[in-house]
Image (cartoon, rainbow, N blue to C red; front, top):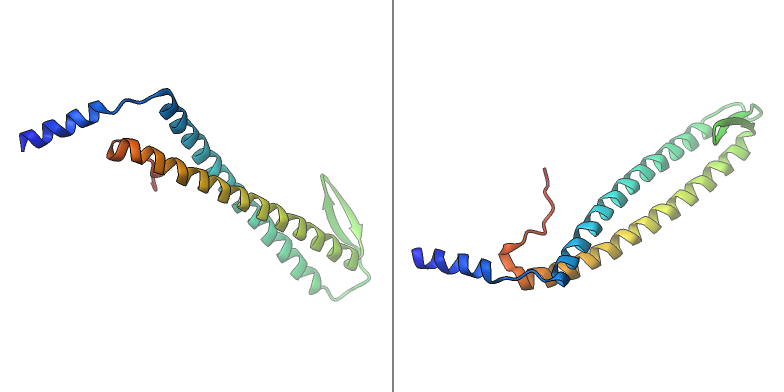
Length: 136
């Protein structure tokens, strides 16, 4: 048993981290961090999208079609007809859906890069490196 332990510690010491390896590790860390940021951005955009949908649903339930509806543009509220406001909400939802799709595509690209880096790094370092995210 002592021989097996001795061989394992020797194997750990035999692995040399080259400059290129360190660059790959750094790239993995940067991409992991960026992916987490993008996932938070997606979550935020989806919440905003749900709020727009809720506002649209509430607008449809209004009984008085002639009253002006306040719509926030930047820091200002502007009164529009119900129809104009509904169109503005739909335009905002479409734009936000495109943004979510774009960010999701970026996450997918980063996941591909991370997958490639994992293969390369685990091939060289085996169990001596941990590239799995902590779930705590």
